[in-house]
Amino acid sequence: MQYKPLVFILSILLLTSLACGVTINLPVSDVKTGPTVTEEIVVPEIESTEPVDLMIEFGAGELNIQPGAENALVTGTVSYNIVDFKPDVLVEGNQVHLSTGNLEIKGIPIINTGDFKNEWDLQLGNSPMNLSVSAGAYNGNIELGGLSLLSVRFTDGAAEVDVQFSELNQVEMDTLRYETGASSVELRGLANTNAASVIFKGGAGDYRLDFSGDLQRDMDVTVDSGMSSVEIIVPRGVTARVLYDGGLSNVDLSGDWEKTGNDYYQEGTGPRLTINVNIGAGNLSLSNR
Image (tube, rainbow, N blue to C red; front, side, top):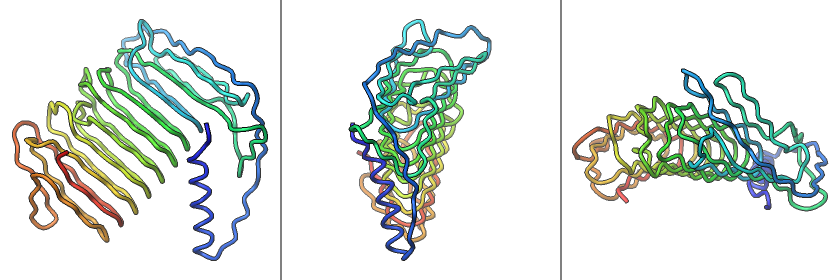
């Protein structure tokens, strides 16, 4: 797999240096690849009266997560061709920590024997848990529908990520929090999170928040981003209000949205979505599709 996000980061650094007339001297790190190794990951269910804290720490590569672990907390496979990408699994009480090993890339990586590979394919079980995913520059395809998630937190750098909740979360979630840098992020089926609040913080990027699904209760949403394009999708018939503070941004409306000043609303029935949006510069799109 060719590591496209890293090229994206270096391009930003280059363009920034040209725009500012500043020379940036970056160190170079020599990273050697080898034969591809595939390992199985199995974390048994944990007997505890407390919810499990599952922490996934992922560096560079491709991360795939979905439901499906049977009689286990986590199952899956990991394939890599850099020795220091060997995964670490640490279980302490009700805390489970999965990490990408101890590789530290300082500066620009020079990979001298071809493209590197670091791919995780994980399945999660139905135990009540607090899920945390911390990642660098990576590609993520993540399905979390139908699990029992009490809270979810994502933190990443320059990434291309698709997170979906295709089925209703089986327990009430406190907060879904997503913090990202210069990324392309799509969150789908957010009504199915069964969350009291959703907090999204982004830098420069393209972000889509789709609130389709079965909204069980009122949900408070905060979207805070820099120079970016943000699309918010709310199905027809859902009561929603968007309070907007946009600076230099534009707002595009399609569907059943109405406007009064910086207050955008859609009439509906049932639980209510209240969405506060702050964009430094860029574009906000509100739609029903």
